[in-house]
Image 1 (cartoon, one colour):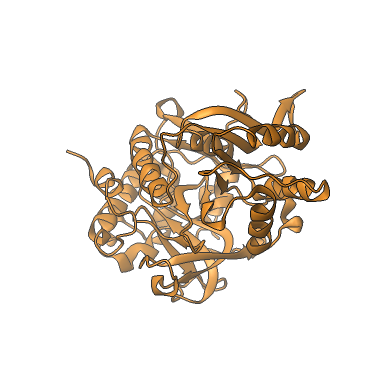
Image 2 (cartoon, rainbow, N blue to C red):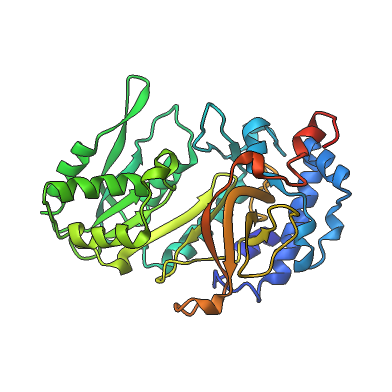
Length: 374
């Protein structure tokens, strides 16, 4: 019989938060108990906060779970099982040589499989029709364990791949962009009858669209083509443009309607797939919950107020990422505010704050690990 986590991830309606609330709470309680028993560092943090797994009895108790900032995973290796037992290992898109290293247990892989199928189905991304893929991201390389690369590659199995072309090629020990090569491949794909799917960073999508505009090139991709965006703007944050501007140029230069533009949100420390709805809002799926916290007090805020984004999921047992604090500022909106009809609340990401501005109870976690007092 499936355990609580598997039952949760097998839920047919990925946005039935009310109906799955007891299941989610039980899965979170079991998950925290597992990490307390198998990760000494997590146990130390929890003890310092006076937390025990039996405190999680209802949805209102989720904010009691120790919140670990994502920056903690960039500076420390916190594992709840030996690395040799992990099914998959992945890293964040590190800056200044620091990156999170997360592992997935086999139970997480199984749960994630059903999650991806359910979420992809909501946007019509599952298809048996072969397609050509343009990956505006990293070409797989044995020395690259970045989650964003694995996710982009994994997305090419939502429909059979005829061919894959990558914007970032591995050469001479590093990655270099080849947008010119991507452009020539795009022109070739546009003449074929097969749908084309873009997947990858919105920044490189924007740069490619600008090349098309500057050269006055317009193509009309075959029916069934999709533009799938994920991974954020990263180091190109200053070049970031509004969604409306990006979508307009996609329709103008590629001939892909807005209904076939899909965005994803996630993090290596929180590998839940958030797929936008037709109104381009990230509704919270049954596999997770989101708490918006006051930047100064860390108290949970009501819907409609802006604060730090705290992401929770019982998906992983290999690493204690049950409740993580991102450096994102966001707002959680009532589901009724979205015209798509989904009743689950939706998350709006506003921007980022500096890491030193994140003052959390778990921001002192590193001090606990070193034996100090925050």
